Length: 313
Image (cartoon, rainbow, N blue to C red; front, side):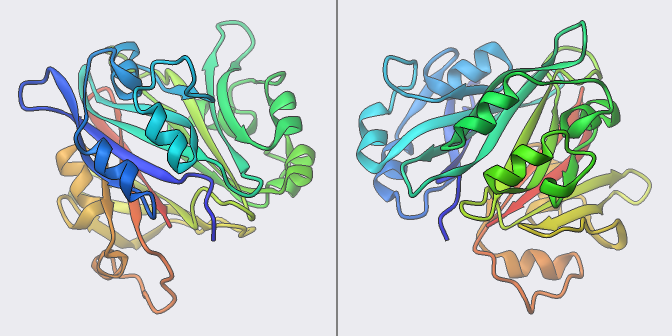
């Protein structure tokens, strides 16, 4: 199955803190791009990772031509054409920069969007990548979300990640008719917190997945329980499912346990290719496991862990 995101990278500060280096990446069949990326380092403001670090906010590059992206030649060679970068802060400290790269494939359908408070009427569109969904993009650029309305507005209000299924028929998803026409079925919204000393949501990032080229086979949200020092399962949804799985306190990761529990301890996103082991740790039956990898992303509200989101592929 082709996926909307073709490459995932995790960039972290070097020991001196002066540059970003590659910690890990999921390159699938694009090994040549991965080999070259592993040799790169980016200073503040340099390349896409360095620019996201400098500006301290999510960035979208819909084209690499005449941009600050520094791996354009090899990216074009392997069919990568666009990227999204998300810095991960714990208070003022940069822990990592996540980079998602997308590219040429058969009719890529899906969306990665960035929304910010305009100070007037709610969340406004800042930027996004939509693949071939030009009509859905046109509509999205012209809509605003009051606090508590739509997927972005609900994430803004709750200050926590939120999952939605069956978007084409959801009263909560304000673009349901457009989603039906575009084939978008599943969504997750993430609150983004800047490096400023504030607990307010600075932006909302939405990942909207289609059945044709899904962003992930499954999304999950885990919330910290300080009393038990554990991450508790809050919600999950399989690509194309109509129903979001409910909280289950019997599924948990201890802090530092496995990849998911480990990102709470380190504060750095992580990739695992041993999904069966991860599922066994948290007490989930893996008999129907058809995942090749997972990406765990810690989200911090100021310097306190807000949640961990997991993308399975």
